[in-house]
Length: 493
Image (cartoon, rainbow, N blue to C red; front, side):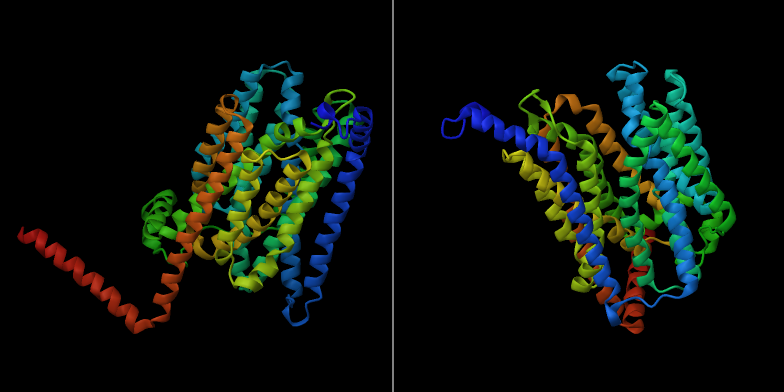
């Protein structure tokens, strides 16, 4: 509009102003990135100086936490290094958009199909062994990138999808089980989740820089995948050397004979039937992360037309700097979790409001014609929400999902998530960007509604617990009597 109409009729002045703004955009994003990192560092520093509210952890816990974080961050580094170059590599191999779409859908589809069985396998045979399998599968997937053969790459996407289903379930399951095994306080687990989220953002930024460096140094789009192999191999070695094994033990609420008599998958489904809160958690995770994964694909086509260089009539959006700012916003969000916990006490009590903020940040740019900077600000807010989400959801799941079938349940959660992503990606050409962002916002509104229901159920359970053993026994007896009456009625009928 500025170039079309001019300001005060001075079209030349307007064009030169836009050119100055365009040339300064990269510097602006670098400044924003530094400012966000300073804010994050300040928040963490204030928390560490919190006096009586700071965590007095033990040396044994710090060692345990450090070992887990090193392994986890090496694992996600292996994942982040690949992301920016997958599409570019397929394009270099001269595949059509349809073929590339098939490759991406196979990756998400294999994650959805393999996920529940991967979780069952991890709960039965061990989370450490499952994490080792993650490294092996992903290393193989990276090696296939050296081949321009479509079917070899298809197999690579298949194993890559299987690996990601392990990454987002078995590592967290191992952490929670080991943490509880040594009877560390629950608030220390919250700290580990927070550090993992901040570290994940730092690793993502570092992966962007490292991937670009190795690509330029070796002059090959395959080089970042080879770098990923190095980190995955380091991850594999540390797991072998320093991790203990844990499985879905029967020390929780599920009886041992049931676990022995039926598959972990069936027991996981039964636990979800008994506790509606677990089902709600799965739906909330699918809604939020489905919107988030679609956002990962869509922020570039949404922002590029809003940042056009008037000289070349091409976008001047500095993708690397924008991505760095996104990750810095994510770090800021995770650094705010401690303050949110101080505000509401537990994570599930504030997440409803967090989802509503996220919904507004995605719907607003879709329904209101905003300029580039305003749209970008909305996306920054969404990334802050993502930073709050991951450690908070980790805390909630660790509290409500049984140890016996934790990895299985986590992977069941990912089935509707992958269905959402595959459905959107399959129809991405038939929908406008604004329609897609509106749909993502609606998913977050649904997450907020489900969180409200979850909160009500949790409050009811707290009220039952406060009744005391006698009242609880009376209520249980009434249920048993009702069951006997129904059974007798059925017999007489």
